[in-house]
Amino acid sequence: MSACEADCKTVCSFWAPVEADPKCYGEIVLQRLFETRPDVQKLFPKFVDLSKEQLQNNPGVQAHGEIVVRKLTEILKANGKRKEIIKDLAESHAKQHKIPLVNFQIISEVIVTVATEKLDGFGPDAQTALKNVLKQFQIDLGACYDELGFKP
Ligand code: CUS
Image (cartoon, rainbow, N blue to C red; front, side, top):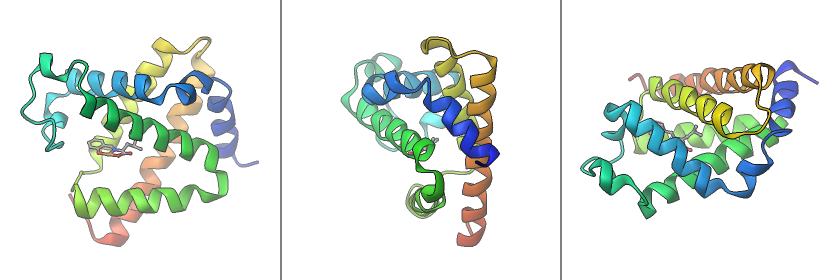
C-alpha cells in the first residue's frame, strides 16, 4: 500500500458521517469557505451577489457543497482510479470555471478545519492524513492544469 493509500484509508475510517450526509457537510464547508474567504465566493457566478443572509439555507450552496463532498469521498475511495477523477475535475475547473489552483489549497484548509471540528475522534494523525491526501490532490491537479496549459 502506498503512503497515499494508507492516508486515504485512515481518513476513510472517520468518514462515514460525511458519506452519509454529503449535503450537510458540503454546506458547512462552503459556508465556512465564503465566510473566511469572500474573494473565493466571487469565483462562483451563481453565488457572487448573495449576501451572508442569502447564503444561509441556500439550495444552490447545499447542492454544490454536496457535489464537492461527494467528489472528495470518491477520491478518498478511488485508489487506482484517482488520477482519472482528478483529470476530469481539472478539465472542468480549468476550461469551464477557470478556477486558479490556489483556491484548491484554500478549500483544502477549510475541509481539514471542518473535519477536525465536526468528526468524532478526528485527531492529529487523521488531520495529517487528510492534509497529505489533499496536498497530493493539489499536486495531481496542478500537473493536469499544466498539461491543459492552464496557467492562472
Ligand atoms: O467542484 C469540485 O468538486 C471542487 C472541490 C474539490 C474536489 C475539493 N471545487 Cu468546484 C472547488 C472549488 C471551486 O469550484 C471554486 C473555487 C474554489 C474551489
